Length: 199
Image 1: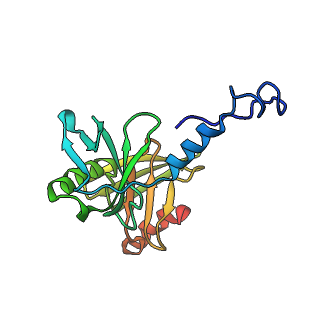
Image 2: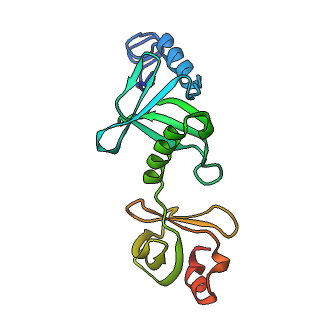
Image 3: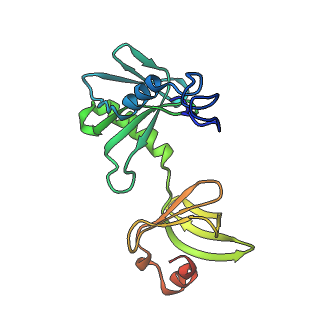
């Protein structure tokens, strides 16, 4: 997707304004907008996914071939098996198409895509809070998870703690790793007191 930079401080009709095709191309903008709004659904009839070397996934859709793709859940926490966005893997990631339901692709393809998403959305579940220490705008967590004991740091000033429901929270550390507490009410009273600052 090209950048729309029709405004560069010029006057209308002059350099940098609407009068020059150098800075403003209406036809190009309309074409890009149409492509952006056009939604293509992928399924086992029109898309062929394959595992590649290095643990990546390739895709062929008609005459288009992508040697590596990204697999992104549009609703990762509320509806993880529906509306899967398939995107290019470059820096300016562009959507290739959407899988409405993992049942729309073969079992082998679904397993391949789920493996990719599990890597992307690796989220250990916090089962016990050992300690939380806050100083100088950061909070230092020492917790037990379903993957073992872990220590991580969050930025107190950002949106590091997100409430997914009244009792379910998602915590993102300074390295963008994610941790989940499915139900804070299942933690002990001392553990909840440690979390009071974030609840």
